[in-house]
Image (tube, rainbow, N blue to C red; front, side, top):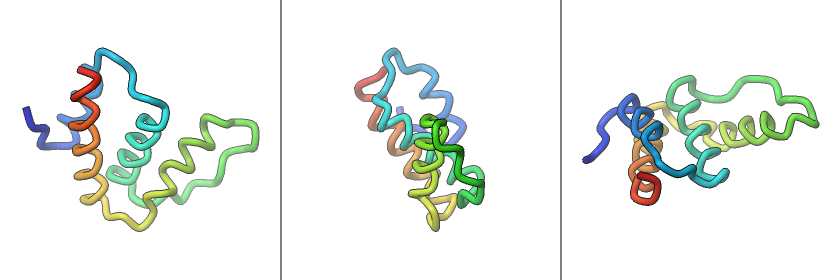
Length: 86
């Protein structure tokens, strides 16, 4: 089953039977934020909030990528992860 839309891809991640690696989860987060909000213009989180900083940095690495490109990459990543997590 090929996922066609961002909404379908998001729904598919909720069906995963095992949790992807933290690295893959951060990629999903960054691509999702880029696809839905565009470039990260938020302030960097405080120094000891490591989870928030990791998410911030993940989103930041997609800066300049169009929402459409990020959406396509998100869907492709979900397809790839579904092979091992469904």
